[in-house]
Length: 120
Image 1 (cartoon, rainbow, N blue to C red):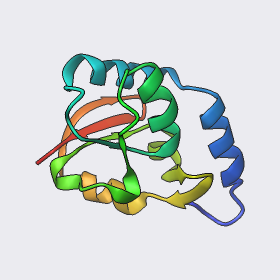
Image 2: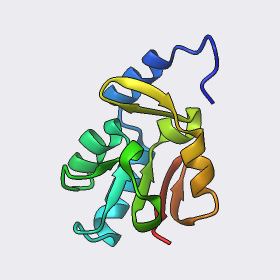
Image 3: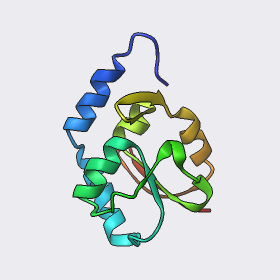
Image 4: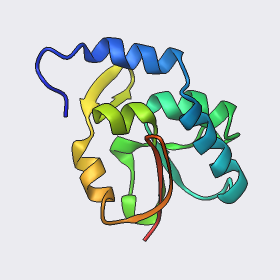
């Protein structure tokens, strides 16, 4: 849902610098309930910060753009769900198609914008 005139770069920078409490809670939930050997997909900001720091997930978490959604757990942070923005390698992109794919899937966790889906 990126619309013309939105300062997407500012939103991405904000969510890369500030970790939302909901994202921390989601990462901790993952640490408690999902094995570290399970395949997990997430965007760059989540993968490199919140999931590593708070979820103690390995850095091998797969980027959303390379994810096999059928066989993976998928983590969407607040930035992803609130603005439908993903960011990889400093580039923002629209993830509304990923969110629509996931809508019919097995949602395991939801709190204030952070969502985790399981494999089907």
